[in-house]
Length: 112
Image (cartoon, rainbow, N blue to C red):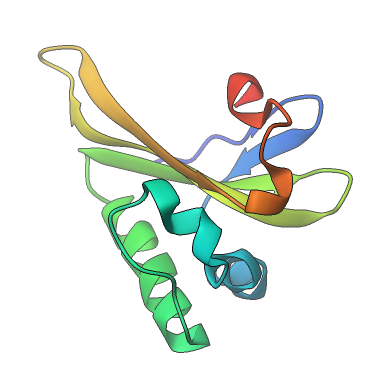
């Protein structure tokens, strides 16, 4: 799938890549992140890498598109956002996201 970067005033949505693996891992081990997610906190960098690789692979499918949420001021990835179950015929998709708890309640998803 073609990735278009989308830039707001504080964040940029960028294609998922292993370049930001350490950023993803930093917040992926925080248990509070998983209060509203369907899986458990990652414990190892290997688990985080597997997750990122899945996002990259799913983004090659016409039914999904994922971005990393890159914080412009802090110059690091602080979350993920994606469209899944894209159905062009029906004009529908589901939105999913995860954000480092350190950045909660700052209005980033209304910007994304």
